[in-house]
Length: 94
Image (cartoon, rainbow, N blue to C red; front, side, top):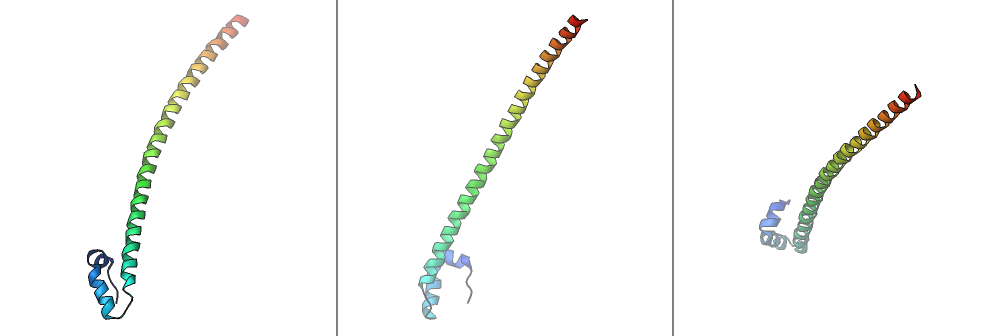
């Protein structure tokens, strides 16, 4: 006989009684309930890790954008500064 996991969650007593009537191991019901609780906790932990991962990805994206903006400002400044100095050197050589 196959039992639905919802039945274990909602009415484990009923399944224990069924196991007793069939002279089957009643301890299996407790084991299934315990394993289901472990599965729920693991799923919750996985969901929390996924949430943290998404948050960190957003933070990394923000940092990268800020650095790219900052670096491009420095590069632009250095380029303009270098270009102006080069123009002066070229004019002085003429």
